[in-house]
Structure formats: structure tokens, C-alpha cells
Image (cartoon, rainbow, N blue to C red; front, side, top):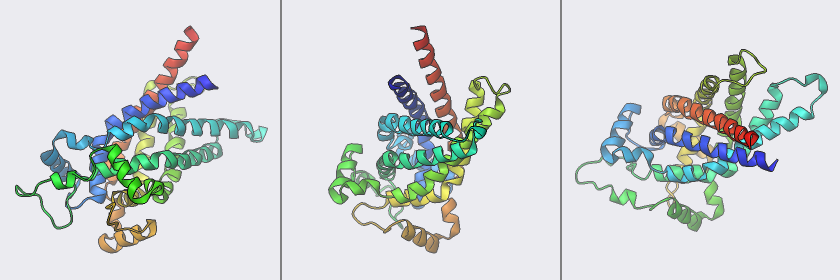
Length: 305
């Protein structure tokens, strides 16, 4: 069992790292659209980030999730696979067929709950760093306006964590966790379930291992579906986490939903949905493909030893 856990950890790190590198630029655009001001549509947001911050602006806040993705991914994939296996072994014998929708649903929900425990602080720090250069309401960027003031809040991920802990203590690291639970529990259901069934459907011989293309396509479709449907609660989570550390605008999930709806209407909860869906495909496709190929390579190497 220990060897399997090491394999999952390594494969989870590689898959997660690949997904972060591929998806982070659009994730930055998504965060600016959802919590920033004056960015307009997706295309205008991309142009503004590039003009003001160059290419480096799209990778702002990437170091922290990249460094922590090993633990996050290994735990999420480990909980999902082990929970699914455990449930399958203890269900009635007349239902012993694979895959089973009930098994997948329960395992996905558990993975979603566990993911918040690890991913909450990671997401919080990432959002804080991504939003550093967003300008206050009513303030336009011109030659006389320096971005140095807005960039000086956090000097990096470690300093960001220090500021949050100093201001709000350990619980401050889980700001937006309620919205994240409401996003990730159903989100992982429409992530792992479509992936599993699409993979099986694309595999002509259901007893064989899915091809690399099947894994890539199934992962991409599952990612697009999951991130697209998760957008409303993702908007709430992003706004709560991007809130000013010393002058918070939102008291919680309910208050954030209420204020956002009253000020910007129902459409605000679908802000960034295009970016989410488009970004979800390559990000998840790369993650699942890298994860599966890494596991296969590790197993092949051990068998040859």
C-alpha cells in the first residue's frame, strides 16, 4: 500500500503541476473578471493584463499552487480512488459491476470535501496574489498612476500567509471555504463521473486500458463541464477570497451573493464562465493524461526491477 501511495503522490504532482502551468494564465484572467473592476470582457481583460503587466502578469500567484499541488492532487485522487474501491467492495454482490454511479458520486463528494481542507488556503493565497494589481472602483490607470502601491501589499506567498495569519489567525486561511465546499462537492461529481464514463465509452474493448487519446479527451470534456457548471459559486468564492484583508466588503457567502446580485444582477454569477470552460479543457486533459501516463510508467518500472 505504501508503494501505491508514493506512486499516486508522484503522479499527482506531475499531473497537477502540468495543469497549473497550462491553466494558470486563464485562471488569472478569470479571477480578474470575477473580482476585479473595469476589465470588460475576456479579450479586453487579456489585453489589459498584458499591456500593464506583460506576460509575467498572467503567471502571478502561480508559485504557491505549483509548490503545493503535489499534496493536493495526491490526496484528492487518493481519496477518490480509495473511497470508490472501498464502497465497491462492501456493496451487495448483485451490484458488483464497474463503474457504478453511486460509488462514483459518493467518492467524488468525499474528494470534494477533502479538497477544501488542502485547497482552501492554496486558492486564497493564489487569488490574493493574482488580484494585487486590480485597481479600486472609479480609478483608471494612466501615466500618473503608479502600480507600486497596489503591488506592495504582499511581497510573495509566504508574506501573504503571514499577513493573513497575523490579521485573522488560522481561520483566516479558510475564508471562502463555505463557497468552495458548495463549488467542489458537486463540482467533483461532474468531474470524475463524466471522465470515468467517457473513458469507458471511448474504450472499445472495456477490458483494456484506455488509450492516451481517450484519457486526454475524457479529461478535457470533464474539466470543461465541471468548471462551467461551477462558475456561479466560483464567482462567490473568488470574491470572498479577493476581499480586502483589512477592510472586508463581504461578511460571508450569503452576504456576498446578496450584494453581488443587488449591485450587478444575476449575470454576475456567470462572469468568467467562458474562460472557465475553455480553460477547464486543456487543464484537465493535461492533468489526467500526465497522471495516468505517470502511474503507468511507475508501474512498468517497478515490474521491470
